[in-house]
Amino acid sequence: MAEGGALRPPSNFLLANSSQNPSDASRNWLAWLKQFDFYMLSTEKNSKPEEVQVATLLTILGAQGHELFRTFGLSEEKIAEVKGAFSKYFAPKIKEEFERYKFYKTDR
Image 1 (tube, rainbow, N blue to C red):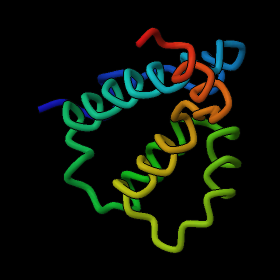
Image 2 (tube, one colour):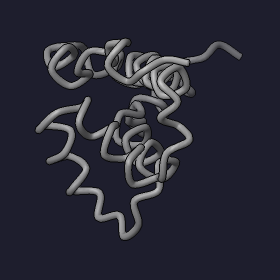
Image 3 (cartoon, one colour):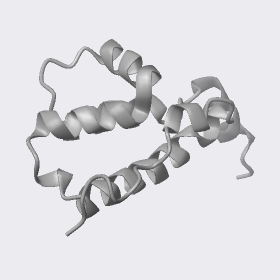
Image 4 (cartoon, rainbow, N blue to C red):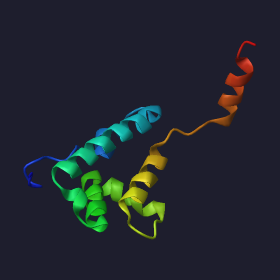
């Protein structure tokens, strides 16, 4: 059984990836989220109430993460919804014009 202080949480995602290419943000977020899930499991914080889990996530994300979280406008703090909101935020944005260009550019 691991104690919360015995293991270090993953590094602050937003600070570590602030200057990255936006197209890599989704892949890097999903990798970071997997590390966070392992941390929660190994410290047994995933069995805590959901508000504690959300608070842990926001604490590790830091002030930038908390500010971003406030823009989501979530009424309930359920860990799955919070993770989903961040995943949606970091998901690659589809540029319709570029996708249309690729479609018409293909050889038939």
